[in-house]
Length: 320
Image (cartoon, rainbow, N blue to C red; front, side):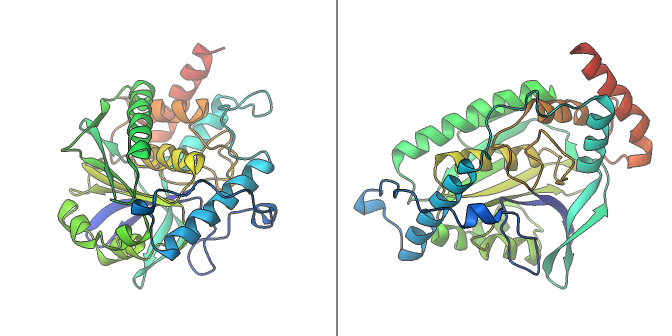
């Protein structure tokens, strides 16, 4: 559900998750059945003091319908894969190469175009500290739930990647914003200060996010060495719980360095078909490969390929 793009002087990962994007940037990813699904009962409305503008209220209803439609088709799975999704070491390795060494989007005349291009290995070279920031529209109960989800997921990612990843109350280098429509559009000055050198294409992708994009992430490689030092994820506050949690899983995981999507990635959240909502067993293995010390940030696919296959076979052999 995403991709990476080098935007102006800022080398960045840019992933637009759950896109049902219209025509000239990202292809439509929501199955026709989901778009035509009957409207479910409305979700409980927030207290009057926290209600958003009519546009945000309409988005809340829209995403509730989207989630219900996907679930009705058996999508947004939470089982991590099973007997119906077999794969072997070679497929694991090929999936990794497709996700880690290709970019899904490229900037073109100030907009992002869906065009797969080669890249180099990107990952964090320092501890990842995930800070969650909320817009004023987000109720207190949702904030508690979301912070708990982020903290648990950070621990899972740290174990999978064998890299220090934690949730922090402030001072994070990976900031997750959960904001409504109006709050996101007002983030320009804060984002520019948070990520110096952020180009206009990246900034515009946040401020003018179409409703067909559920969430996004970008990560900065300031020295252009393949080492990330800062990332920002944007998640819509209008999402119902499962879509919001799915965004947390995909955007934070993609912000660690697996930024491309591939239709061959299965069982995985790094796939445009919305089959899996949450990180899968394969995804954990992909992160283990990414942060294996035998691979180095900045490596090309050709340099990394033999070692990637060796690591994948070790992982699958240990589990057989």
